[in-house]
Length: 250
Picture 1: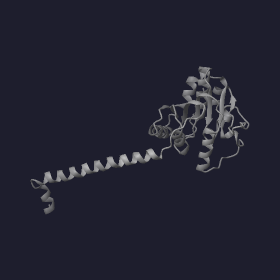
Picture 2: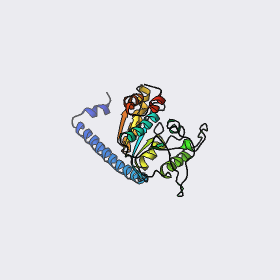
Picture 3: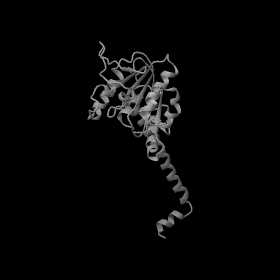
Picture 4: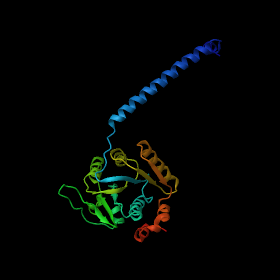
């Protein structure tokens, strides 16, 4: 054993060593607190202020960590269920999936929205649900080859430049994943709640957990469905047959 090592074992050294480490730990904790406070101030300045969508009382987002798990079908069924359970409530459905819009097909809607004198787009309506999607503005087979800034601009227009009139509920069909669109919508508008849809496979659940964590970080109340198609099947008895038929599952 070396002399230096023996010195560490001598009586009296233990207290000095503990004292040094104690000071270092206290200093480290103090620095961590300062950094956390500084980070919080920076984040508070950088986060946009939430602004409600004109005419919309409550917003519900349907999201998923991965595509192909029944998210859009669940969003359509949720919108129809809200309208069916209370006919006095006005319900809207927004397709925020710019790259892969599904709402036009699922709601059997085609055509371009009319524009009001205030330069606002009028939603297309079917089954009593006011719908808006980028799919109404482009050809059905045309790919959306846009960079992030163009996508965000389109989503902002779908949110703010639509004449929603007066809605009790707006259901938003989010794109899969945890990217710019999800984060911007969560931070820019007040959201009553989010539903994460997934299938039971481990890979799908892994991505669904990421989506859940994202909504927790932006303080959005969140619930999850382990099997999106099972959720549809369990609740389809009160919904129109056309939706159940389009899911292709029983």
